[in-house]
Each structure stands twice: as C-alpha cells, then as structure tokens.
Length: 241
Image (tube, rainbow, N blue to C red; front, side, top):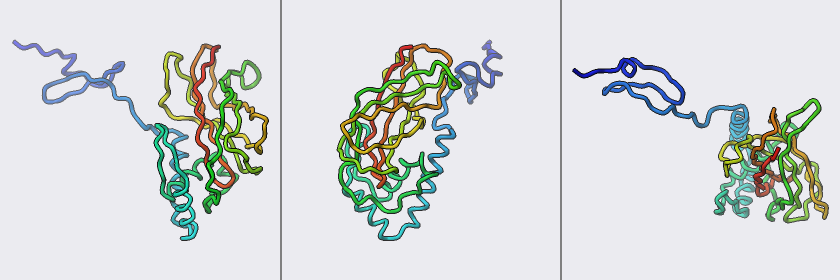
C-alpha cells in the first residue's frame, strides 16, 4: 500500500523560506520567491517625475527638441561597465532634468538644452566615509563625509549648480559589493572652482541604534545650472564603530 503523508497533501501557505504548493503529481515545497522591483516611496517619486518629464517633452517646440538632439550627439555618456553611449535627445532631456529632481520644487525643468558641449564636471576623491551621530536630537543618524576636488574646472558661479548625495542602506562588512537601490540623502551648492577642496557633511535619512561595523556606498552627482550632469563618483566605505 502506498502511503501519502497528510503533511504534504494538505499543506498550504508558507513556513520560513518555503512555500507549500500542489500540482498534478501532488504536494511539494518550493523556495519562497523574493519580490523584485517592489513599490517604494522613492521609486514612486522617480517614476512620477519621469512620467511628467515625458509629457513635457511632447510640449517642447521643434527648436527646443532639436537643441536636445544636437546636445545628445555631442555628449558621450558612459555606462557603469565603462562602455560609451550616445543617447537620443529625448533621453538626454530626461537624464538632465531627472538628475535635478531633488530641487524640482524650487527650480523648474530645463526646456532648452545646454549650449556648452564641454565635458561635464566631476569629483576627484580625497576622502569619504560614513559616521553615526552620537548625541543630540538626531542621535543615531548616519552622516556621510566627503572631501573632494573638482575635475574639469573652471565651474561657473551659479546658485543652481549642486552636488547630490545618494546612499545605500548599511550592509554587512563581509559583502564586497552592493546592488540595491540608492536613497537620496542631501545636496549642497557647488562652489566656483578653486584650489580649496570641497568638504561637506551629508545627513542621510537612515538611523542606526548600535555602533557595530557596517559597509555603506555613497554616490555623488554634480549637476550644473545649464543641465549638464557630471559622471557619478561612487564610494564604498566601512564604519568601524
């Protein structure tokens, strides 16, 4: 006589990392799938901004769209693996304006493409690291310190040029890389080019109740008043406690 376990034939639901399921052969267990691309407030804001910019693109004049096409042909955009791409005018319009999304409430989208085709500015890293605030009303808040010099100077003095800071969630020091989403932390105005390095403390929205070591990734992006976006500076650092 063949014995059928009621544990398998009647099982339903999840336990630990397993899901109970059935097919024509009977019941079985499978690993619980991890949802991908789950909705978050940050993703919702980004998707809303891109949707608004896409609608705005169709409202531009032919001259304005041609200006973005010409700009796109002159600007070579590197991908993270290092290959070089030439984007479409529409893609550059989205790229340049979405990079300015943290200040979209203050500064309206740029309708005209940049007229300067020089390489956008970048940052030359001197030092960067996270630290945890030890007292005060924001006790436990994680900050990220940046010390860097500007590449490709000079930079025009203008109050619409920024450095934006994005950070990862803290992760185990045993991991060598981070593949998750980045969280907007803070911004600072970009000073005119000088021989004095930029030094800035960026407060994040992440708090930590203990001071055990952790790794963290930060990405710093420069945007100029004319819409040009600098190559991101990505830094991985360890908080040693």
